[in-house]
Image (cartoon, rainbow over all chains, first blue to last red; front, side, top):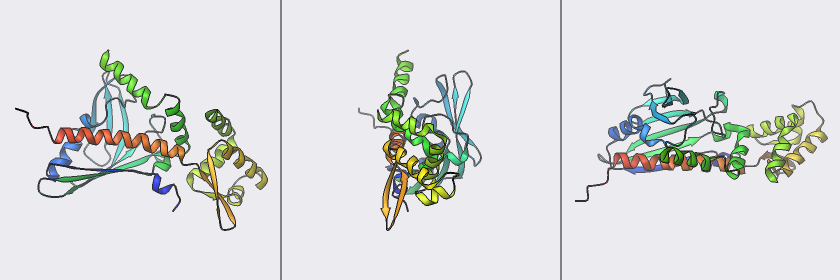
Length: 159
Length: 103
């Protein structure tokens, strides 16, 4: 294992007061409200984000003008336990068309009791985004990363 | 400026090739040279430029010196995604656990 391997993933988990089936269903069906809305690769504001509940489907944003941005492929769909999507967004926040250069996100749902569910999220294989990592560091420093998105967001909200 | 040096360093196609090979996995100079149409000293020279730009780092393993991509860029990407998903999970919690009515 290289020293980078451990770093090349984001792991988060939360426990929610909901039964397993509902926890899974809400995540998929309401993903539109879950995804931070200001993360937008379209030229227009997002009307909705759709999570297609099947292997081979996509997660995509639909803009107010009807344009679409498909930024994830559904790789595994096993309700109510597990879903895996690809992350087809490069480190400059543009759609990555080469599947070899995409990472993946697994979300696991584990019943802790009849009324509580642990949700484990792992965004892994980040190293596959390759040389673009450097642009992230530069982009953040150059105010072209998150600050830009947040500013765009506030413009949309205020406008 | 550090950023500018990075772009200059990656402006050269051979260095870009070397960098991409290191992004794949850490490698020693000999291994890099074996797959490229340039001499081993030339590879070393390119590695020095990449290292000075903060794009790669090296470490000694036994008698070999192994080069790898500097993880700082990857760490920045990870931080961004960490923030993205933290916010997503916070929204998820609010949706699934509506706050009780304060009446």
